[in-house]
Image 1 (cartoon, rainbow, N blue to C red):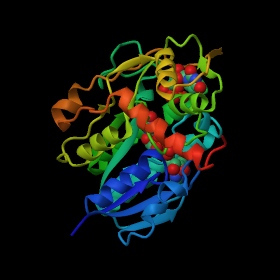
Image 2 (tube, helix red, strand yellow):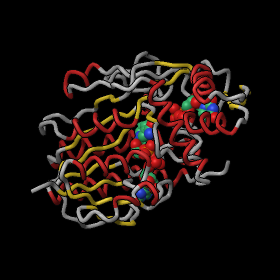
Image 3 (cartoon, rainbow, N blue to C red):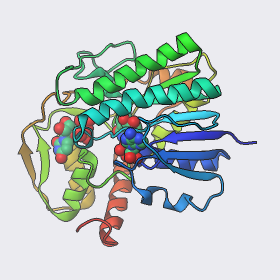
Length: 318
Ligand code: NAD
Ligand code: UDP
């Protein structure tokens, strides 16, 4: 018999893809979401599947379910969204983690936390290894997300040590792909839509800051591999694509692939914007046998095709 798997944030960009992959694997999937940043269209095609169930619920409120595994993804991920209601963002990470860990403790489920490279803040070491404790401003506008995710990691390890809950922590680096929210303000969706519409491409700062972009399918593969590891593997494990690009390079590649006439314009850099990000994935390779297989050019083209289709169908404003 397949496992019953709870995916919190299952209506979002990564969560909806995870639900799909879990169904393909033969699991029963409970998709829990309050649809703050998720979209029912992401999971509409799954609703007819008898092994799929949708629960509209906020993770900050306790819930009683019987499950074998929990993937805790509920949390807005884009800076624009998580800064919109910072108190709710912190509650989602902290109260959400406590509620989901309590559920795991009661049911004996294995629980995976979608943590983030933001744990490292504006990093002093490069590339980032899991042993690095990070450089986060506790008072800044990104802190509601960064500190919430850091506290969640602490809760996961404390439930593991104190209550022997089987936990897994994945630190996700910037991930992109089809189903990103068109208005979520993240750099990949912003640049693609601007290029497709022929609008100016908004580079924040001088564009020399770097990010490492992982394609959605690679990321979910790494996440499912971590869930399948033996109980003694807790992580944290970095999962991301070590290819490092400046934001200006991303803008230029997007213009090239869309054949756009858009021009680059420069806007102020948001406060505490990290200067560099690149995962060291030695652990992911050794423990999960995982490494990304989708180069940026290929993943970006697929994402461009996705947004071009949304524009053509009038599902986002042209
Ligand atoms: P997303 O915004 O598309 O998905 C988050 C989902 O969580 C949405 O469907 C949203 O409605 C839901 N949600 C938010 N608050 C909730 C609450 N209180 N109760 C129930 N549901 C709630 O973002 P995503 O990119 O799919 O990110 C998924 C997870 O991965 C997040 O936890 C995020 O922090 C983490 N992550 C993502 C990235 C990335 O680059 N995409 C990087 C690092 C970490
Ligand atoms: N960025 C940009 N233009 C945009 C959106 C973002 O130059 O229209 C920059 C942003 O300042 C950051 C990088 O792109 O340096 C990645 O931003 P994103 O919001 O995607 O994720 P982050 O890694 O900062 O959480």
